[in-house]
Length: 327
Image (cartoon, rainbow, N blue to C red; front, top):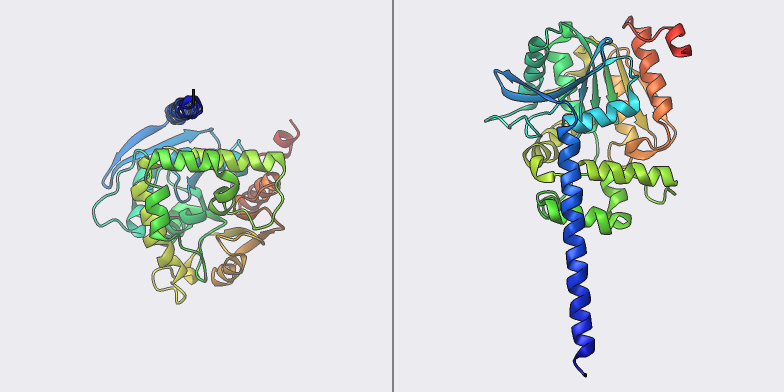
């Protein structure tokens, strides 16, 4: 009888282990089904396969996702910040789901791949919206193909200046293994979730905010399908843009497209001071300063959506008419 407590403890551990395994398999299955249901397609280009999703039938908007994303993240971000009456084209960048990393990849090469994708879709010109780390290739596309970019919108962009870079040990441990990442964001989200999602320290989250953070972190699964792209973003493209103070690789002063920069004043990842400096570098650029919400712009989706819509409309891009808005 003295061994009974030990037996019960072992039994409890076994039951808990089974429960964790069942939940993990269920969540991973849901993540893969979410991607499969997104209606994505694959374009064959000179830069390899590009997986993309296309939603809507209005004026085309090329949506460039952020770090640890993919076309699926692009759709999610567009759903929050782009008026649904525009047409969204959301590709996976190099190293993300359905878009393999080519040899000797560069941000400029990614911009060229965007041009190939638009060619494949018979789209001559589009508005471009780059989110977070996606700002690097969005800017390069505007620089390399000015005649194809009717407007440029940069949401919480990486920009020259100071900025945090994830230690390689953290990336290797948590962002390369599906189970470890899942277990961390599932059972320790209050500890790591805020930092990884760019929530300002000390910010009190509403239940809706918490749900949005949880959704974003879950949308990164499977992280194993995003390793190459995330590594490139964190250790190549982002530092390259942060450190380009002189505009050698990104000559901002030559950008011809009307430009809007959207930045939360309390963003701990893409610093607001960098966004303000970026606006001064780009001729005629506008700044939409969001008074809170961190990197995810929590609680400000409608404000941002309206700001982007009005900016596009003001620059001659066909958008929702007054009558359409009233419906």
